[in-house]
Length: 612
Image 1: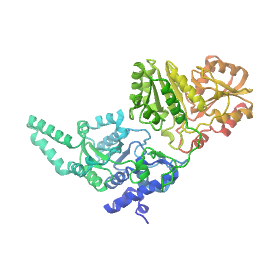
Image 2: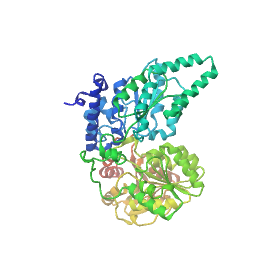
Image 3: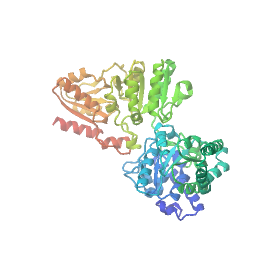
Image 4: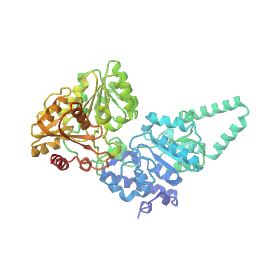
């Protein structure tokens, strides 16, 4: 029997010796590797925080102490230690554990997080509530270094440092190698500076010198400059935090000692912890990006399962970008920290001076693109649908209002599968369709995707192409070879009584439906502007117009068709099919689409019911 077998909740850690805790860390790491090899998931980031997670739950008393995880893909060890060990085999599966913190899943998940940089703000709110309730418990925010590139993290720091709340911010710096700057000296300094002796001297010194303002100012400056020479904490000190670190995030003893010292300190504290992504699993440690989000793999070798041979839409975009960059020297590519996920790796290597990874800063990415465009370049912003939500004001105010030409390549539009609601691109049609000066397209296959990207790049305005996660499934029709004309749909099949208007790749499951119903099938291509002429024609010649989209029905493409029907006082019946007015779960894309009623059988049944 292993130590982990007897650990089900954080209270079970309290009686373990330091040596037992170290053994537990090794067992946890092996358990995570084995679990993720069977389900897929985020591996590198989770392996890097095992010791930190154990130390936190050993020193603090969750959920009385509020532990808030940022960028939720570093919480697997936390889930295992908080009552969900037996459920790890269901991770990211339908009706199973979420891959991210979920308040609905456990009382130990203080705040849901799929996007980044929210931990400091939410933890500060909790710390303020604890203070109002006269509690001595702490709020702890664990934020990854990538998340520190977002403006919201600094907004939270700025506010927190001006308060007297008992908040601890832990920077999980997983890109910093554990070398000379995180050795014995810095570990010793962190322990010393978090201890009662230093804190007492600092406090009493301020009291003594308070009557001598020039001496106090000299002492303050001397302390800051001495600390600044040996530790990189001056920035966080300026925000009003007591900075500690950096410490070795894989040295359990120093983590526990430092956290126990910090636990007794009052006010905002900042602990800088250096970890290695993939720590303890050689394949992930050598190639942390490949094992960031991974499919099922062989834990003995690290070899991942073979994927389908057809290209993904991300790969289609990558190929188009490489071809277009060769042709257009003014093309630039921008990503908010998703170079790998958005298919920009090859472009970054080939054209480094035309590639910009701005960090987790979607707002900045869009306004930066606007500035580039105004200076004679043509920016392509490669961004996930769910992350574009974070830059909506910049889209409207900084780009659309000024009608500045930018091409948006919107990846992960629609259902994303295992990542669930936090990453689902369920709303972009609704929030883009209402923005003036904007063209919005949805390809039905990979060839159409490339054509639309080319069209969007040449268009002298704002264009967006939305495409889904995963592999393309080309249905060889005239849709695959015909050119793109602004606002024009493509009739794939002519039928009677029923006209099925599809926006995007769901066209590919509707061919069989159209054959069974002898229905007209249309690849709409453009969501904005709509092919209103065709809609008017179909309303005259057909009894029922059906719209199908992988976006919420509310305000979606179907709503746009209804607006055309209303504006022209058309006499026809309509049926709008899309994602329901609820957040979708996690599972395979096929399972979630079926849950949303967008599988072949359900669509057919709904159309037949509408006709009857």
